[in-house]
Image (cartoon, rainbow, N blue to C red):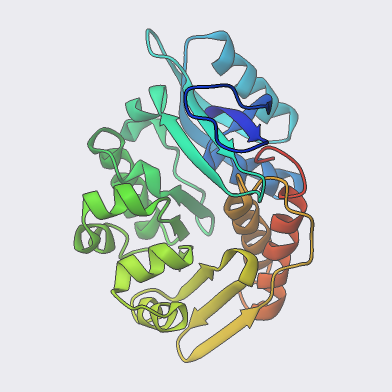
Length: 282
């Protein structure tokens, strides 16, 4: 859970001076974004995590509940709710400044196991810091033992590289579905080509979805490789596009695990195209 401060920049860079910007504040956090989109798509979803004992945390919990998500969020005294500053350039590309705050306080007891036959979505950020990592690993292990399906998004190349590729692949070996972007897929495999990386990862995981940004997305499972183009859209802000894509794809896949790969990819790409038309992740 996090508060997103979205700064849409205009004009040329002006080091040491002022630059015009449009600034808005809204709910964010990768797993929270996926949960909110899934709920909007009619899925039953519970979000586990932590917030700070502050007005920001209370507001985020209320916002998610209003969106149809069941919040299972522990309030951590003395720790602020996470905050993400997203700096968005004129072409919609963004860089992010992260203060994860209470998110780093997650412990195993904070995560409720999905019911048998349910699904666990794990944001890779949970595994990339030593404090919440134990909770993330326990959730994956328990969900796998209970026969649940599991999806994992690697989250970000920088912390992933620092964490260690082999370690991360071992941690997520029980995942049913992996959701990297192209850079993450290349990092995880050492392959230069996104299709080659998708095929290599599909040798480890039952289903691999590689997000290609403006080039659409790939589905790899066994010997199957499917590409779908992105939906035509006006790009204002790419913040949360991957989370929206994940929710759209998961909603199709969870409703019908035998769904046509092209249809599942299209469902995700439709959600991503909708999100990037406006500032903010949801």
